[in-house]
Each structure stands twice: as structure tokens, then as C-alpha cells.
Length: 85
Image (cartoon, helix red, strand yellow):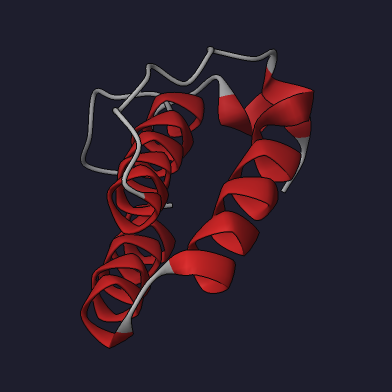
């Protein structure tokens, strides 16, 4: 997807795609924090060109630490993002 598209809403939505990615990143960060017994922290909002990398890193954190239930929640969050984009 071109970077210019990340700043625009997806069809039928008024939320920019970059915001949807950030929300999913936050959900993954929360899942990883829970799995690791850490407090939740706000994920910084990056420029659109960093959104994909942030999502990948936080997804890797979940894969490394979550149990089956956490992995299922992460899977649903990423699927919902994919559908929304």
C-alpha cells in the first residue's frame, strides 16, 4: 500500500488507516504486556512509514510471550485490521 493511503480512511470509515494500524499495535502491545506480567504502556504514534514495522515488532513480542488464548486474540486483531484496510 502506498504511504499516502495510510493517512486516508478506508472505504466506509472516517478513521485513517494509520490510526487503525496504531490501534492494532496497541492491542498487540497490551497482549504482550499481559503475557509478560508487565504494566500496559501507550504505544507511540509513529509517522505512517513506521506503522508497519511497529506492528511487526509488537506482533513478534506477542508470538514470543503469549499463550494460546493470547495468540488467538492477536490473530483476531490482525484479521480485523486486514479486513478494515
